[in-house]
Image (cartoon, rainbow, N blue to C red; front, side):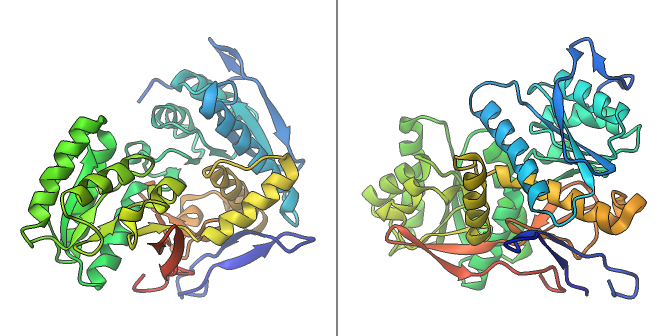
Length: 396
């Protein structure tokens, strides 16, 4: 199995993207809009970054308000940073405002395709991804989107985002290897919780484990207290050796405090989480001391964050790195494979790619697989229990 090839930026030799192609011998629903420069929404605002001959569209909701609009602008900045750092970026980025709506995203995609875009990066939201696909698929233009909702994924519409299923599978496999295969789960009673529950059942079945009990809480303290108390009662019966709490933020610490009040803490059971635990509120919670959770290599994002801040004066949102990696991927593939750069065969190469957040590969069904580390919380600090694999060799 070939390993991904490295591509470094000039100057400080900063990593932009790694990728490789495995050769046969292992050497290496919406209605279709008429493509046009606008729609019933009017002209699509945007700008062009770079001067290369290969046109790449980036669709982000620049005119959205609040956190969404801020993230969109940071994604645009991240694309610019990737172009600056590439040795020879033979692409230009057609940045289009997707407005944060399906209609806006569809109009932006139509405009970009009419302007010669050969691949579309973005948009952010699942409904907008589906709207873009209704335009891009008939035009045979691949999409690499930022949504985490796998319902929007399909062949030709790939998600580069951090998918909850990857988190669940990584932590379950690691925990099972440490003898933790009898789970209790505390999940929110919403779409995210439903997805997590299904992923947990599937991953545990693959390693011969089981879910002893699942409690679904509403997003209020009374419900969370009731469900955590019920889980504590089951754990104290001795049939559970791991408690899985996928939410981060204020939820995980509060649930852990209720469990502790009911006699269940780190000395009785192994606490497990998802990448949402990479949060000072969770890491600093004493009742979660010793807990394990998966996540990408933190060093890569820290380096990216420092470079971004030096360029634009503020710290980027965690997901801004997705736009950097997507841009670097497009630039690297265009430089290496020319006219075949954005074919399904190249985009889904089994050896994958490496970017800010480590190794990843796009799968034929539109989802992705990421090489994740496993972290341990130690008195408000993190240590690495299991490093992220560097490539997708056999047995990964």
